[in-house]
Length: 292
Ligand code: ATP
Image 1 (cartoon, rainbow, N blue to C red):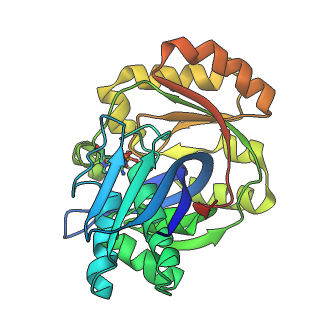
Image 2: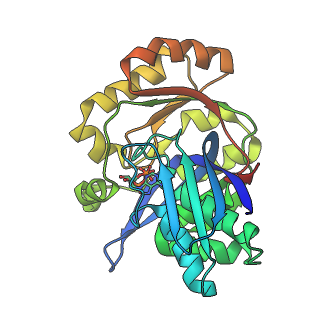
């Protein structure tokens, strides 16, 4: 029986603005994504029965048809008229419902892995279109590196990726529903920030300090008003660690700091370790999914 092992990398948003509300209820975004080294391992194996079976030990991850990895396999199977049976083992490291696109990364890994394992020959662009049917972040998880995302975040333009920039990630253990955050966003009162252009220019120059100083996420407004403890954590992260800057990623609750070097990140990690549910030092990654 054949098998394939795929690393499914998490993402952060260096910039996220909401530029309009759509008729279908979604919002149009403008965002800059970056893949990070933190990843789940996704192992896909053929099995004798025709079923798709997902295993994941994390209690917050459903293993049935609600799992995005399951839905990705099912979509590919329906498209090609059946791929036979597979098992998908997900070894979770990415915190769940944390703004890091863990579920989307798992779905991207399945689209990429099943395409390779069964020689389906779909192009990356087609896989990204399949992914967009399941979740707005899945196309970027397949694309990887750094990209500007518009639309619901699924229309991507490549940007130069940062090479091994150290990041410190903190998650206070509050699971936040993305849909609720958007409902709370008082869109009419927001004025557009132009930080996307600035971050893009600093990415092109590889200027890490410039990026750190201009990080921006509009979704911090509704999240911080409901959870002031996340705002306090971000302030501490940006003022007490010597970081270039700090930001909440996606709809939270994870906050990250762009650090000058790995030693500083590791020192700060030991400072926060016992106070948050998840704390890790990682680096930026040039890829989103990767067969290993
Ligand atoms: P979102 O912005 O969609 O909330 P996120 O990055 O904040 O994404 P995820 O880790 O993807 O968070 O989890 C969001 C929800 O998706 C969780 O409540 C979880 O139950 C569900 N989910 C479905 N499949 C998966 C998966 N493979 N891994 C993690 N969560 C999954």
